[in-house]
Length: 272
Image (tube, rainbow, N blue to C red; front, side):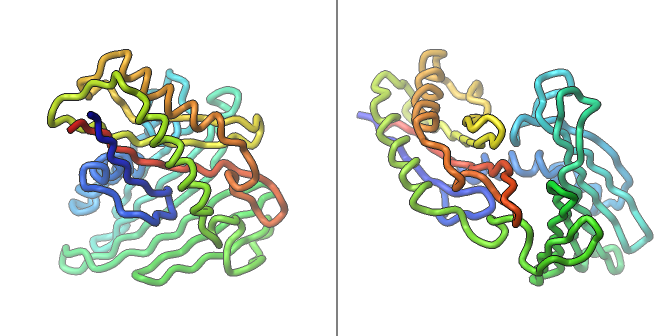
């Protein structure tokens, strides 16, 4: 008898708490993506640094593989008590030379007597038509606004739909239910007695092709046969690809332009 434990969340709009082992998978991936796996220590030491990473969705790859976007990280000590960390995200075009900036986030850390005091963050998403969604955070205070190509404020609640409202819960719950039933039918799945498989599934609807892009974390570290890995991936992919794509699965600006909206779904499998 097999037992499938499922816990879930949506990236940027989590509404269900998931288990600690799944949380560890999320935390590790997010730290690498944000650069905090290295930057945290460098901020404390106030050391200057520069490095670049390449990704498919949120999963690291290398500069010669089929990467989809890259992130340049830079940390600079402005003075003894101030350290600035900048993350610049670029989307790959037809070639590497065609990469365009889609987000720049700058966080300034303030210290007193070498002890962390507080920080201020400003991020800017670059949208079609020269529009910019700007988010500023300091302490518990968050300010969001939409700017036009002239730098003038259009509104004070952002340019993008999912900056103002949450992704519909009923859509997510139906996907989860379908995945549960598909995986439950993978009868030949073999896991060790105490082994758990933590999967971070990420799905992204492409507004250009109107097709799903599907990404998984590395399953090679688990004691799974090639057949088992194929069965898991095939079962989840079948559920996603059978889901009709509508405007719900895209972010949208004030003028009807559509953007990718990554949905991250954690799943945990274990035998009993």
